[in-house]
Image (cartoon, rainbow, N blue to C red; front, side, top):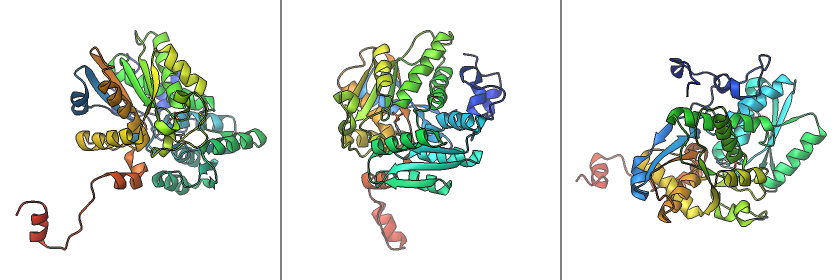
Length: 361
Ligand code: F0G
């Protein structure tokens, strides 16, 4: 698995430098990087023990990327390629994370950035990022699917680079998540669990595993397990959802752009795409936070919720390794966290009263 030179593991290098041989860049591609990637893959034994005798479980915490989500892997590629061809402006539709990442990388590259968001349906941490990085934030009266339609139409009509995952460089960059998993484990996991929204990420991971397999760096491919939120599950239901709903606003999407590619990843890997309810998502998010110390956003917890659900059904019949992608950081959506976590207690500034409340007196 010798993609890394000895010693280089201690150096942070741009993701594109690290996996240059697998990416469509040349010596003349200007690399726009915030030192993304290289995210921790954390073994979660306490959850694994609770749900199955057969699982060794890891979570890859993509919330540790520079803007707090996996989008940075694709954005370093998309923005670098935009600069290479002389683009001056970028645009994306977003449930929040793509926008935050596009805004940050565009700022770093000196590009103008516009983000089209579904009004009232984006977590506050993500909105604050886009605003802070100086993007033009346009909140429309419509959902993500409307925002994506408008974004496509604008990018076709005006000289502005679309940086949604329809941009092939986004997928190219996001493949690196699979490379890192294989580099960390020394092989591919048995199962790869992932939330599915616009379906770019499952597409990218599958392409990444296939690229490593073709290069002879792994000798088997994982089975892909995708999870959609129950009321935003067009791929599972087999038709677009007009009014998708879920507490996991990041994956509140009714007509995914990479629908067919997600189905291909599922079918080629012998995997599945299924639903998890908002209750299951919330339970998994709390469990990660309270038994493993890992705070991810609701959409991310869909991967773990899915694995818990499948374990309860007896799906994992033999010893296996499961990697769950935690796509974004919990601080992205503090409103939701405060709603579901145990409440805090307000007290006067008095030692005895505090001690009593703690059960010490
Ligand atoms: N998890 C998080 C935290 C996300 O932000 C997204 C997508 C997904 C999962 C699903 O990934 O779309 O590749 O299937 N967020 C996009 C956005 C839609 O605009 O930030 P996907």
